[in-house]
Length: 216
Image (tube, rainbow, N blue to C red; front, side):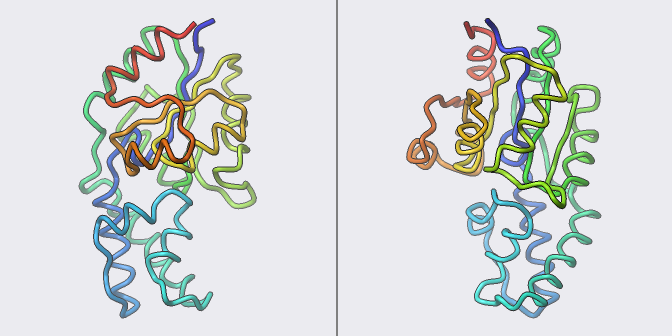
């Protein structure tokens, strides 16, 4: 039986959001009088949601009120600047068109703030993503399986595939009992993905398309 739905992570999988995330992190840190972070540092800090991104970026500051203030500053700045340099990875639009042509449903499940997930999905993939779910109050974020299972239920699919780029995504697929493919062009290296337990890796969108369409 072939896959009838593919559910994607967003940052590092469909979109390269690193420069805009880094810019907003550093804006918020500067407003708090803290030193900035390099792009490589921000890359390592991404994956467990915005609040954890800010907590890691602001370290050694740990005082809850200070973290909250930096978080709010980040959110406001990112709302207005999340599309400045963000772009789909090479081949992603073709990938989504291929899935549409084969009547395979698509969704996004991300630890990114829900407003940003929905905004970016609509901006970059209009008409190509059926459902977009981000981090929401009261719902455990990945690697908890809740949002992934919600997407599967909403899509009504019987054989979903989850596609991500991080150790968090590997654990999310495992926790949900869903097959996964993990891409090497994102925010984690091939070595890190293998260490996290990734069994199937895709090095390009064309390879990912083959893996999806040749499923048995």
